[in-house]
Image (cartoon, rainbow over all chains, first blue to last red; front, top):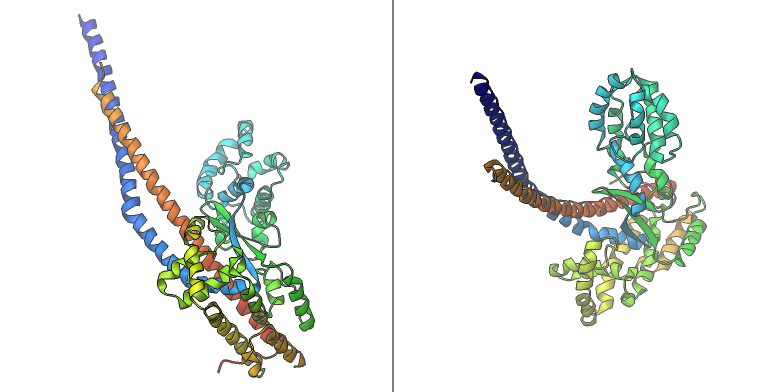
Length: 395
Length: 72
């Protein structure tokens, strides 16, 4: 009897335990559900409105600065287009990511691993296979005790990030024995991706190596690398320009204005920004009917200035070759501006602001350069620029 | 016979799934917005950089021609 009662009690406790487990599972599920719903509420109610507000403001800023991008594009005779980096580079992108994302976790991950694995190195051997996978967690530097063993394994992988990793690890070893090897890397990482225009330095080795040196600018947008490419509008003009520049500026180091206008050296060399008005005649000669020729984008701001603000969104048209989202809108909105051209005297609409702007620029430059502002400015032709350059040569 | 816990848990799992779907949609919208913002800011940064380059070009030119004057 007593044995039976004990058995019943055991069964009862077992069922109680099962009941308890079920309850705890239910409670956990409820908590998960609550957390998800709270996350959804937070995202929708507090984050999204702020982000949308910010998007609106940044759109306004971009609307404001759109004209200037166009202006500089016209001046440099290039069209700047951003495009998404091809997915072939995804591997290198993911290898870049850990510098900013995975370092905090791996620093905490490495520190407990250090004492565990140092006594028995064989335990670590299967992990090395994982360390070579593109998984971000493993591509961050390991503690130094394992580096001597790891390096022969990572040596065949000649990816830039691996070399960069090794260099930084060596630097860490040289400087001090820190218990957190990955934390020093977290500091330069924001600089690497903060600006697409920063000149390639030693910290940029990973990005600099995979970018062709000429024309490419990098920008990170939500795990995508955007490159900005400056493509010349017409290849026939560029040799003339560089030729004329080298003729007219013999003192300056031979400046060939190429697509690599973002590098500081070439910027300094290509200093004669006065050459910009030289291109205006050409720009305005290009017919807008060619499609996505540079002329369209050049024409837009002039129209936007004169036209009403309602037409402002149409400035997107032909503006940014890179924005895929805007392409649909471009196709939708292409016709109204074209019809406008028939009604309004096109020459006046198009020429006046840009002409005035170029005139003012040349005038300002001449004034600051100490030259005389003569009546030549009234001509506003490419020959004006050449004349000013001739004047400066006589200085 | 279905236990009440199982029923409750399946209900909870359904709720969780719908919540995750909603959250996923919200995050996708958020991502889209952020991408637009980033593209716009990228263009603005480009313009700023061009202005900076233009300024440095003008400065270099003026210094090279010894015609840099103090602002009056």
